[in-house]
Image 1: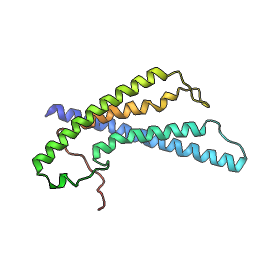
Image 2: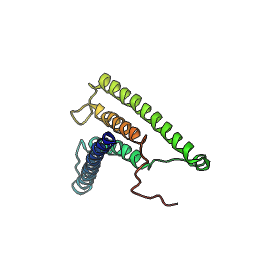
Image 3: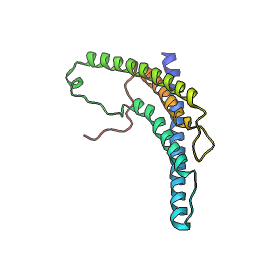
Length: 165
């Protein structure tokens, strides 16, 4: 039980860090797009790199949010079948899905690392940075999601927002 408590505490800290990174990426994206619109329509000029950087920040924000959705059970699910199953079968099915999800995240992480390593020298057009900065959040999200799927083996999702039905 101590290992689970430590695991959950560390994962909660990573989740807080991810939330703040999402806030930062979203704020940066909003700031850049707002400044770009102001400059384009107010002063008839623009920022060359605004679209690429705002797109990169959007990708980071979205992929950092995926593991938080797994944590809360917020991703789309269809309960048509599981609603008619007993509690023990539902629990076993949830654990099986968590194992399958963790396995898929290992594959996604591995493939993201391979793709990034093979194509790291491809550069963005307007920024002196690799296009694979778009691939890095895929690997980060896969690793973070893996740990949430493992945690789902001993606890149910923490629903902080209730669905409206």
